[in-house]
Image 1 (spheres, rainbow, N blue to C red):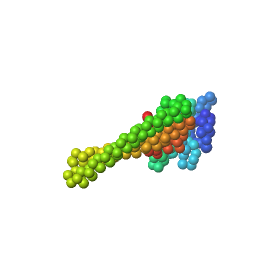
Image 2: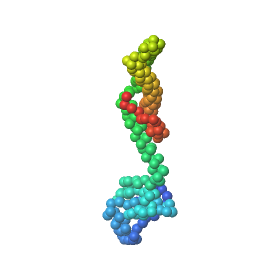
Image 3: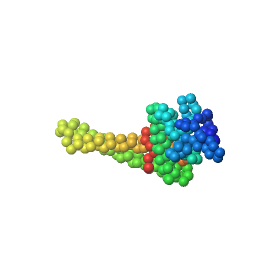
Image 4: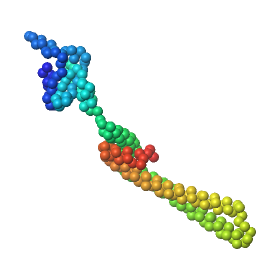
Length: 233
């Protein structure tokens, strides 16, 4: 019984023990209900409605939601801690935090695989941005070329209309194709600029995560709320 009291004191607060029978004490002999509980292998430590700590062979249904500990009946060592049941709001918040930590940890593992130093992050950023900007410049050159072709085609169309001969159908098709190609290139250039912005944000996050080397809840939540998780670029 002293062992039980010692473990309950370590848990904190007042305690009582739930037992269906009193202990029998004789010379060198102590028999009580704890012996019956030991046969089950485990006892349970929980807080009753008055805030007192109780140890027994079961947890009342009304107290299980508040959480409890499972103890080895022989050593009184804690073998499992059952957390209090969360409210719907608390459960939702916990689920988001768990998901956020998982996303952040995946990103952190990737960063640690890819980079050996923060200089590696800076070098990768520079290389990625150079590649994207090169594609932007190439698209701009092609756009200027197409815009020049379109002007020439439109000049020819105007000449034909002035001559009274009507617009050649092939010429109209060429102008339409030029307009479509110009639109495609303008959209590509806009997309490439967005890639630059995304890359800047991604490498900034990589660098921060690499330097920090851990996933705090606050940082993890930022990854979860971001437009997209870090990619394997």
